[in-house]
Amino acid sequence: MSRDQDIQLEKDRARYGLLAVVVSNLAIAGVAVFGVWRLNGNESVIIGVLTAAFTAVSSMTTAYLGIKAVSNTAKSIAAANATPPAAPPAETPTTPPTQRTP
Image (cartoon, rainbow, N blue to C red; front, top):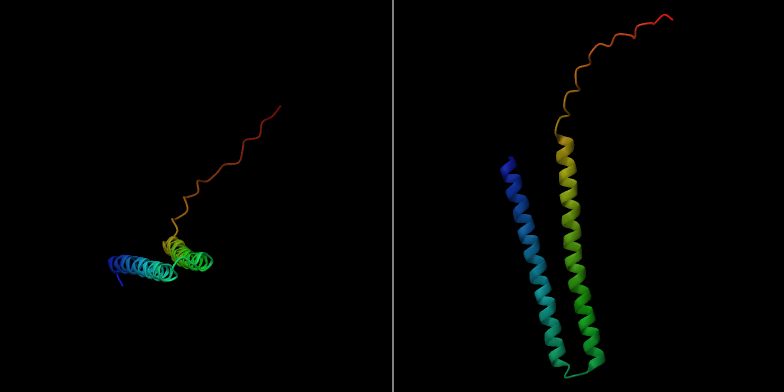
């Protein structure tokens, strides 16, 4: 694969991964709203539904961002290790210090 294909593939992965997270979060929020609407004011159950929905949304989002961060870090480390090291500077010959006589 060429460098441009790698970049495009990474952009597609990020775009569709984020889309999956957003759609999942919207689905969870929709189910939570529907559940709260159907409960007709039973506060203890509403609190449980909202807590579960908030936990699911935050877990999904945190997992995506964590995996993305680790992936980006690993990719940058691999890219840094793939570049050949620069040639060491040429050593200049050193002359021993001259002996002083008192």
